[in-house]
Length: 340
Ligand SMILES: [Zn+2]
Image 1 (cartoon, helix red, strand yellow):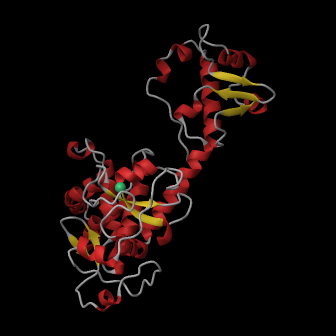
Image 2 (cartoon, protein in one colour):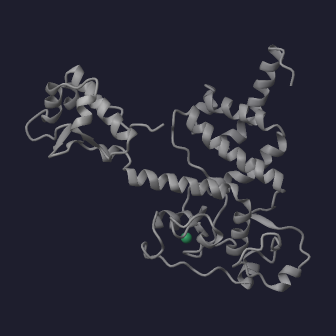
Image 3 (cartoon, protein in one colour):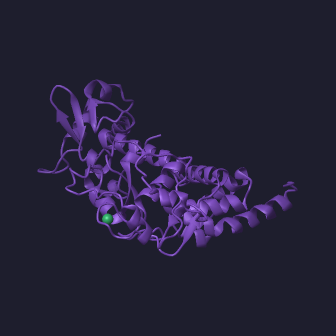
């Protein structure tokens, strides 16, 4: 379902205050129509005439400025109908919305594809492919925080189109190619650089991945080093989780994003897979029952507990409060005679 965006004080403005109830309803019907059919704020006259609240008098109210020199709520578009004033300031255009959907699809695909992420880490190491600084996997907001960037925003989540980038470079680049953003994509680090960056730690290619562009040297492949790296933060280097754990963790993150929007009344959820994935792995290791984990997510998203309700209820909060929710659930199950 799509949502209309209105500022919380829109109703106080004299331009709405002076409308009749009928015109006020008609305005809402029109904005709902624009949102639903992604018309970028345009409503044909024929459609307006079909609205329940339609009357010529109400249309006249809407196209008349509330005071001389002010903009009317509806602007007449000759030979077509009307354009809702300022619609695109508060609502996404069709193009932007489609773009966002495509990006979110890409993110989800990447969230599921642990193999691609693994290969990316092995190819790019620990530095931003645009500015070369060492990125931080524990920095959630700052410019040095690690992100995955789609080199061509429309190019899909293939290893060839993905690079590790610092958050600063990623946001500067936005939804543009490096050329469009006048940024230079640096070549992947050489094996020597990788080795030195990782202090000669365990760079072992996952032979099953066989992804072109990895180009790790034969010595390294022959190495008997212990485990494949996955999270290369400055402080910790964790082994790549087994497939079943990685799959369940990726599913949990997806589920969390889905439930967040459902239970937080459509609020936008900012995924931070690179940061949350290791935590999700820990959670699915602790709770082997995915259905129970889902129940715990719903509890954390809906609780009135002040400790939780004052936060953004992001995945990090869930990680902290999962045991607490589990205790509550156990207590409820006990009181209601539910056998676990
Ligand atoms: Zn950078």
